[in-house]
Amino acid sequence: MKFILVTQEICPRCDRAKKLLRELQKELPFEWEEVDMYEMLDTFAYLGIATTPVLLVEDEDEDYTEEHVVFMGELPRKWRLKEIIGEYLERYAGPEREAV
Image: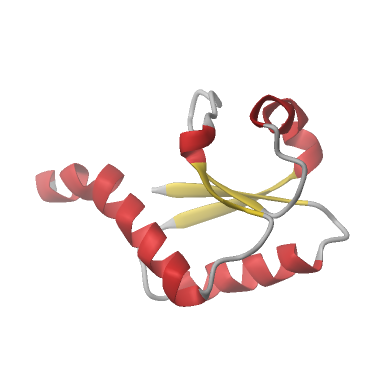
């Protein structure tokens, strides 16, 4: 399971989000990639997003909807983000893990 962290250069919350995701990777099996918000301006406009950081569940077709948004702007607390990512892992990666 992979997430996309959309950031911008001058964003203190973005730095905290990166640190938080690195910490959670030690506890949960997920990947994430950082993408500059200017690479996703069309997606931001479509979804009405006007802030960073934004954490999205990766969509290989890049057909993002509101359902792909994990959080935007304010960061959830570490324990809450761990729960949220865990739920995504169970929902989307669960059947794959069982088949292995």
